[in-house]
Image (cartoon, rainbow, N blue to C red; front, side):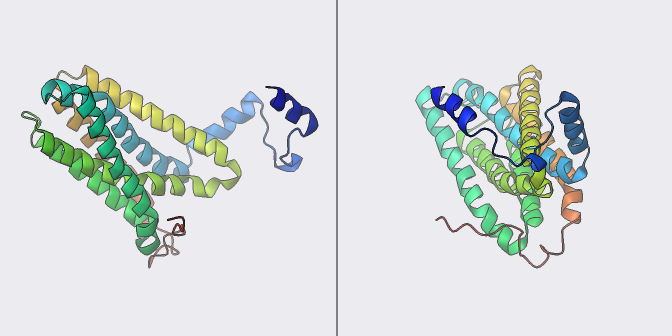
Length: 236
């Protein structure tokens, strides 16, 4: 607190005055409104938000499935979560490298197809869940989500460099909104958790794919031929 007070008095706002945005409520609301109806932001942001919403729905439903229906202990549940998270890390590591070769939008579409495939696979054993098929299906979903999440986020934020904070905040709101809706529906559907989860994941994945399709069809010339639009990470 003392350091913050000293900084505010001695340094103050360092952003140049000509680049500062108005903090008036009406101006902020107007800026959010313009961003929310801009398809350059809305389509990729909504695609990412839907698959992220599916992830949180999985987190909400997984304990009931893995512990109540499949008999895992709380420790085994934690290990299962830790293992599946590694899939997301691996996909996030691969995403920029694949995008560098084939383009952000192409790899994003592939990720959405993989997520949809994992969601559909859950239906195959929804009435008689088993640990390995369930884990395989979720791993597929998370692999697809790990590909579309960083690439879709980059596509959504890239045109709005001067309003990156605003766009990022609205993206976070959309993600948490989709998560809240998905988790709520998973809990109120008159189905077993092992049946309600594939319903939500498949619905979200299919909607994300449909929403992202116009983005993929508008693929910039710079990405045709595999420049990818984002540099390959060198921090290995």
